Image (cartoon, one colour):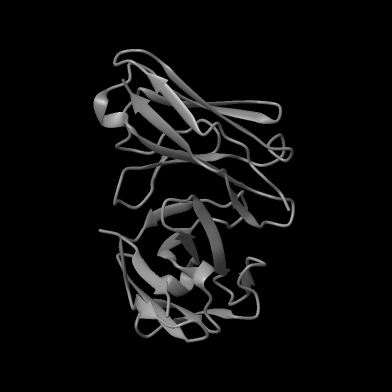
Length: 107
Length: 120
């Protein structure tokens, strides 16, 4: 079955830039999406179609794609950005797939 | 305002059945794709099932043959019928609007989730 691979954890100090990667063989042909999930809350979409930002999401969140890897970048990280982040895409048959998630810690 | 509210979770014994509901407001369930996604305690997100606007349904291998997704157009509500439940089905179950038409699918918004615990 298709898999998306994320690092389990990323740590940054406030004001620094956090980068979370997601790798998958189908990513050159399928868009990737990113969700933020804080403890006890439902996931929230923060990036769609690799690099688009939904309304209401701060400009410090951005996304990029290169080959089989997509990257979520959070510039000027704030304490409130501490959360779990999941990438999501689909395989060639349309089966929805999530990455394993990355815990972002703001030191 | 677009909103999704799940209900129906609870404690159920292994082998039992449970039906989850997801009431939608602000949009029409039958005109959209809708998905269920679950999250086991302390674990990541797992897609479970989708129903297309035309009525076609698809399932993750882990629940195929045991779970059934459906909708009631008159109530603008999505359902997940879960049979032959196992301990590994223990999770928070979220419903989400599925933007899968003509593009790589994604989920937005999500409901607040309902907890299903399978235990004797």
